[in-house]
Image 1 (cartoon, helix red, strand yellow):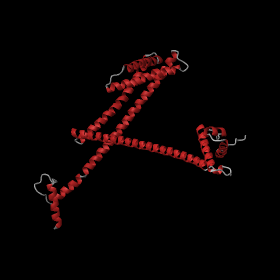
Image 2 (image 1 turned 45 degrees about the horizontal axis):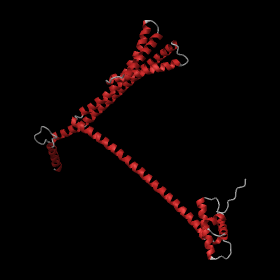
Image 3 (image 1 turned 180 degrees about the vertical axis):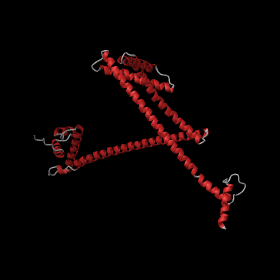
Image 4 (image 1 turned 120 degrees about the vertical axis):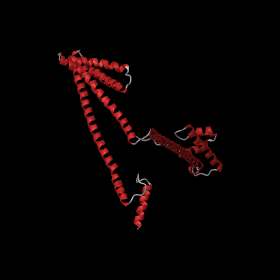
Length: 345
């Protein structure tokens, strides 16, 4: 029976792997079946426990969130109500003291802001165990004296009015302390959650140190990747700058080439001036002389930046040619550089 031999081998393998603690030999078929059923049911236990724990944690966090929200909302209401209550009394006190036409509101802004800010700073320093600086202390004492005077003097002169006037600034201090303590408790709760994770997973100090080291290494790798990306971006920017420089160099080269082309065109004009000469027979030496004078006239126009071609006298002066050659050259230059007609208005 093949199935029996397969089961026997499977049971023996499980026995050797420690699935049946306390047994000195491979269990029989019935015991093996009970073990299989037990292991099958046991597989659901972690699922059920995790489900129960997840539901409990979620409900606990939800209730905690609702309680925190209620505490913070009520505390903010107390802070806001105390500030409004005190501000109205401060306004009346400043009016009674002679500050009118809007000055009373500026005075309230000065005293109340100093008192509220210094109280918040003082409360935070006390909770965190830090030493409070003298400016914060001075602002608190000045503010508390002003607020006490304004609240006491603007209430009724009986003992209830005086008591409410004294308690009003104290309520503000207490409310700010509750808020500050709430935020500090949240930080401690996060630390407690971390310790709970360590305890539940049976983590040793070495495991925690490995986790911290791994986190720091990942942070360093991320920072290194960011630095590498910045370097690559800088290289790309430098490459773009180099490309732009090359493009500018090409543009300059092209402009130089265009200038050369223009010069070549002008030279061509000079070399081919026979078509500008009148149809008369001239010796080759005369034509060459006229070409020389025309070439010199073009140079003079460029060097002197003249608006029109140089005249006969200037051509004779610079070239030493005779009257006839200078006139013929002048005719050619006038055709090369014709006068521009003035626009009629």
